[in-house]
Length: 224
Image 1 (cartoon, rainbow, N blue to C red):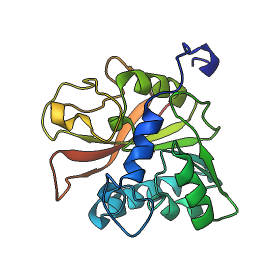
Image 2 (cartoon, one colour):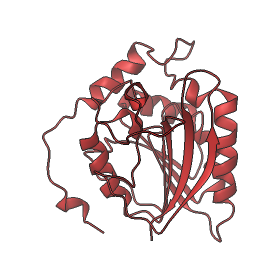
Image 3 (cartoon, rainbow, N blue to C red):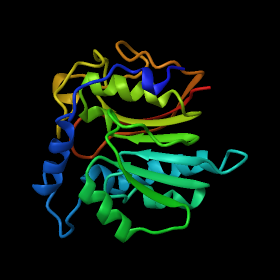
């Protein structure tokens, strides 16, 4: 496994932080009464419930409760359903005001919120990383840096919105609100240029959204 400090340095800041702050400032993922809303993907029952069930089943199947790092926790509508099944739950997002909001709204003895840029900052230690529909919004350069950091976790549960037919993976995009579906592409961390090395990959759940195209796939990767 590569040491995070050995990853090639990049200039700060990434434009991603500004882009994601704008998403919440302008309610680009939906207008609601809440100041922070992470979109239908984090609220539609047909998308959230199967995911929570699948991840909960995994977390309760291991011998000892895991330290879980939710990398890109958003408004925490999904993560709040999983905290109980962990030894410790560390929820991370790039938007500082969102993290401040979450700290006020959600409390538990084993819950911690951190404001971090996944591509730039050192990620918290843990047993399992949850990365739910995060990489799909990022450029290949950022994804590659994040994937190298994911190598330190024993388990990675990754969710991506991809085409529901054959496609060329990992076409590059500019980080922001959009994803690769518009390019008939999607993120595959096992493929070039990311080449994530794992012992095992197991699909946990696959959901076809009622609205829009493609399929939302959640995969459990055993890293070591």
